[in-house]
Image (cartoon, rainbow, N blue to C red):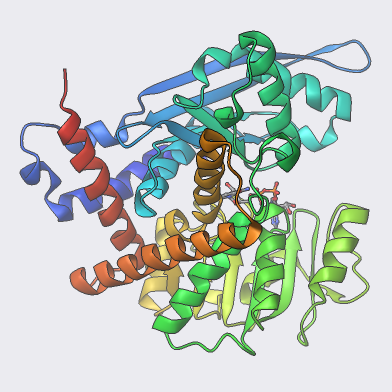
Amino acid sequence: MSADAFSLAKERFFRYTEKMGLDRRFPGQSMPEHLTEPDRSVEVRISLKRDDGSVQVCRGYRVQFNDDRGPYKGGIRFHPVVDLAEVKALAFWMYMKTAVVDIPFGGAKGGVAVDYPALSLAEKERLTKRYATVLVDELGSERDIPAPDVNTSAREMAWIMDVWRLIHGRYQRGIVTGKPVAMGGSLGRETATGRGVVFAIEEAAKQIRLDLRGATAAIQGFGNVGSSTARFLAEAGVRVTAVSDVAGAVRDPRGLDIAALRRHAAETGGVAGFPGGEPLDREDLFAEPVDILVPAALEHAITENNAGRIRARLIAEGANGPTTSEAAHILQQRGVTVIPDILCNAGGVTVSYFEWVQNRQEFYWTAEKVDAELRQVMARASREVFAEAARHDCCLREAAYRIAIERVATAAAARGVQ
Ligand code: NAD
């Protein structure tokens, strides 16, 4: 992701606040600036002792963007291209997301610039625990609560929780979400983002009169979000005909067997070589003749270079920031409906909130209750975004931002400035 990712996010934001007349509504409060300045950005050195005895020095980050509506909340990403601008952009989207679905959190994000999959298991544990140790004072269940993101999972959350417990000498389950169920994680959290993407698709499909039974979909990315989205789309009767990941892509116009593809990816590390489909060029995934396209990998996947080739009617942004502004403009002109990231992938943080609630109460929900509550949150938020878009004759992204900005600005104004 380019170094100015955060500036691009801000530019888009200022266009919306200008149209909303935010300065007039909250006079003398510099509200657009208040909402686009992170509360705190921490950059740290993470020294990793490699298995061969050498030391690798990495940069680590935690950006606590805004807590006007509740404690900071956001994932941790371990990926070579992580930098401060990317983490700021992701933290910014995070607090917009918690506001769109109206859960009582702010937004944060963290990361380390490292080729994490290339590390041994012992190196992964040392890196994660080092990261948690140097940032331990920033974290807390009423302060800043991490969760999984790219290349992190329940395993890393358990390691972070362990560090916090050793340093503070007490258990605090709500310190992280997305942790193993055995340590107080929520049922349904691991698949929550994909589940939420499909709930959002179901609501959008009603609005644009797309019958999901027999509809087709292509998915970029087959990690946590992409593979669970594929599974739930297939369960909803959608034929998933093409899937890609960082190393390859496969297609089958009759519909891929998603359970078999998940097994193949788990065994071999990726979708390439799946015997139940034919190989596809990764970039050609975007031009597949499908009804629904789900970018579920990294930022800036859909650009002015491929937006014109997209044949889907509906794009569901499983990833954060997958569509550039230029591409969004092209898609809007072509009449493609885009469910924006801050709504579409909010299922993960929503079930993180449920996990945090269960940890506070030490009373645990069934998987059915988690899914039912998530469906309600995603359906309500989707309907609100569609209604806002109709009210202002704008795209769903602008509508989602309008709702989020209004909620956060109202809370910020109520708190006052000292
Ligand atoms: P992950 O690490 O589990 O999976 C990422 C996937 O993307 C992998 O399959 C990888 O091979 C693939 N990928 C990377 N580069 C690619 C490329 N150029 N082309 C095709 N595939 C590529 O990560 P994840 O947790 O699934 O996150 C994916 C996206 O969803 C990110 O934008 C993340 O911020 C967002 N997100 C994740 C969650 C969550 O709960 N995990 C919640 C909300 C949003």
